[in-house]
Image 1 (spheres, each protein chain N blue to C red):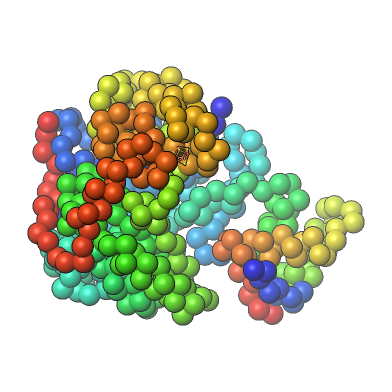
Image 2: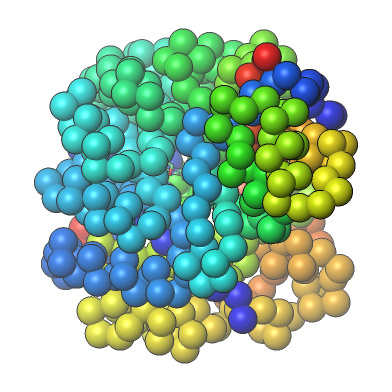
Length: 93
Length: 358
Ligand SMILES: C[S@@+](CC[C@H](N)C(=O)[O-])C[C@H]1O[C@@H](n2cnc3c(N)ncnc32)[C@H](O)[C@@H]1O
Ligand code: SF4
Ligand code: SF4
């Protein structure tokens, strides 16, 4: 099942999901009632932009300022994945 | 080596309710509960070990008057803090206090969607207070998981239970079949549903998911007695979680104290790090070396870790055997025999009382 997502949606961590820094590895982790998800560096940069204000297009642009050659489709597939895992909400835009 | 990610802090075994399925032990050693300062020290040590999640449970954690400062300290240290509660004692003011201390999430247990049955199972007239507690939580915008333990008495009401959870504004509903430990094991013959009831329940879960798709996430914890393979209990012994009993005993799971001869350590006497790495309680069933056949050469061992050690001990007297819930276990007939008493009818049970001292 792929979650629908458009460039105008304004994604945001779902209520109860919190981004934090792992005290042992310094990696970004998502904490939520059921458990923990460790994010790789790129995913961490993406998720930290998802504040519910920036649109997906703006998130892609912001990430592009950190990493060269960011593919829209890669960001969207990460976001869809997090939505499917109930960690992110799309906020229809 | 793996690090622990979750700490289950059992703050007290005191509880005002009497759920016949309660997984708490029937008897406990006589020893004082850890003080707030002792819990602070445990939290610091847990953080150093890399623990990210803290589950405050019991008994009824709200029975501890010092819960709010504990939550505040835990958040300061960086934990994701969940309160696992019956909701009794959670009025709007207490909920507000806990929310401002930084509580991340509340898991509130409800016995049933039917008030009379719910109160009968809880052994007290608390249904309305629980609903009020749930509303206090959602009014404060705290994430809420409603937990319902399934047994033959409520398993036919999954639809109404999901409707109730949605109406209360819960984010998540956890429908968890009774695990047979403590009081639950004592009352097993009054609680076990039939295979038909379980099958019907699974259809009801699918329908409830379709109905509440957008708003309510529904988690379903299967009835292991009716499954082909056992549950990956605690994600492996001594692998992800540490349980601290009210008196400071450190355990790999809430039911482990019953296993004879484990050599249980206490955080009052040993550091959490020493316990995690060296306590025989934690090392005894860590990894795969302790396994016998059929687990030893089974490809599923990395998925289910041979099932539950406590269940193996309870049913066979030997914690190192395969979980008898597994159909490959030579002891599986013990589970099948237990299922003979499964039935849809109401039977008297032993209400949970506060644990007696052994
Ligand atoms: C032991 S209770 C302690 C916290 C609090 N008194 C409560 O009931 O929510 C912890 C959680 O385990 C659930 N529970 C209790 N006995 C269980 C059992 N035998 N099998 C599965 N879950 C159980 C409760 O519903 C609750 O969500
Ligand atoms: S009796 Fe019920 S409310 Fe009390 S600790 Fe057990 S499960 Fe929780
Ligand atoms: S034999 Fe052991 S490892 Fe294999 S499925 Fe059964 S319990 Fe799990």
